[in-house]
Length: 201
Image (cartoon, rainbow, N blue to C red; front, side, top):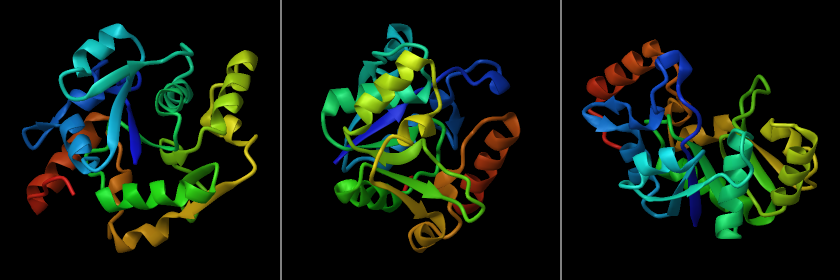
């Protein structure tokens, strides 16, 4: 199994910090993520060498090939690196559930992409699995200036939109999908971890 953590851009709403290096419960978010992904061959995808230097002590790092493409560039770099289906994870998900990750990865065995879908139709393209079929679609998007992940997915034939409700059997409150975007999110995550004395799962 192969996974890529997208280090991403700076957290503008958090004062420009590297979100994966924020601490919750005394540990950095990237450490929780890598623990949840311990059964995967994992890389951290960085936007440039400067960011790569910050993360290289935690795992193998690679950098975007297609610059300025945001998450789409990170997915492309990961697929080019592994040449295999890849589970993609954002670097700001402190409650990542390992069984959810494995489930999404295994579902990609017979699909070009597996993207979790909320009951209201909202999708989670940065905690999803993608096959190498996405590489030419991303490169097409790069040539036409389209940066949204779902624009690249539109060109795929076999896309599974996985009902998030079905993942509750592994993660009852679906905390896996919590992102840290604001100081309020960070505070809430700290409270959740303290209340439940949660380690990574």
